[in-house]
Image (cartoon, rainbow, N blue to C red; front, side, top):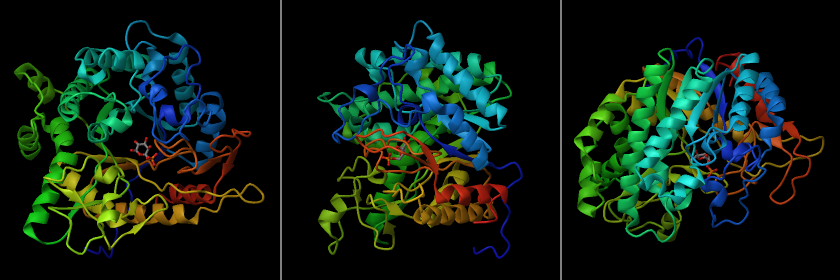
Length: 472
Ligand code: BGP
């Protein structure tokens, strides 16, 4: 469908941008904050340092003023759990709580709607030491943390996200930090953790609806459509397997309160089945989201095996989030010769964005919001403190066009928050992998003055927002 006449972005569409606490705030041990798994992680890439990041903790007023100038209608950020509860549970750290009060007030002052992620990868270290998500006590700790956030900020926050990219934490548990190195039976452990996180999420959704009837809450997984490597039925089946294991396992539990059948049979066959009870399944059925938030960077392509003419080495290098956790007996990631790649070897697939939005909407019929989408690149600061990131403008513009096509297809989409509002430290590839509309003047080892400079994409996105998506 080409849609000669495109449906406009709805009035009040939430044009926004995203960050997460550990990647942007810095101040990792200030004002009583406890360490998180991120602060303790020994990332394989030694350039990654989350102690100062973009120093947003100390510069949030300046940053929010820039977000207002950019024209953001919403700003997605996360609360660092261990800033509120340095031990993960127990006594509230008032100074940590006050930071988010100030941030939310500042956003409201500029008429920017806060979109708050409760948990974005940074599990408090104190909980991790007691078993982390393998320990059911972490479910209660999360529920208590979520209820506290609802109490503290619920009068000024209308949109909540439960857990960022739970599917990536499970598919890449060893990398993101919830699975300590050397854990026996890692996959089984991860799927048990997954079950616990699902319960934690359901309890937070139930509490949100009870405590804040006017607010809306939803999950925020990373969802991407999965292409078969060829029309060969075995490849199509492999793509179907991977879609269930990568996407629907997480959203079926969140939205329908039941395990996806294909994902369940995969776990059964592999010996990964979690222990579950009827009472837990009742909680999962009760906790329902009001909307689905999803992060999308690129599509994935898989087959039953590597095609005969494929570049085996290149396929094996497809290690990004799209092909997390390859299981060669069920699906094998392959190259997609129809797509270009970015500087970090990630595919660029705007049409896949439209397909993904349609697939999610078809399956769940809930309003959608995009909470991440963007291009990581080596930006260059040139004379006059300018950054000409035309490649980012091209990426975002093509993706927004596809979003409008998805809306024209009938998808109920109420917001778009690219990653990231401002430069921040990438989860695995340091500050050199930049995503922001605002440049932060530092490099990997030299913090320089951390000054903020508007990139070319800043003025471009400003126009996009002002024209409600018409002026790309
Ligand atoms: C998502 C995470 C973000 C962010 C983004 C970009 O998976 O939710 O926290 O890191 O990916 O990824 P990267 O930093 O690896 O380029």
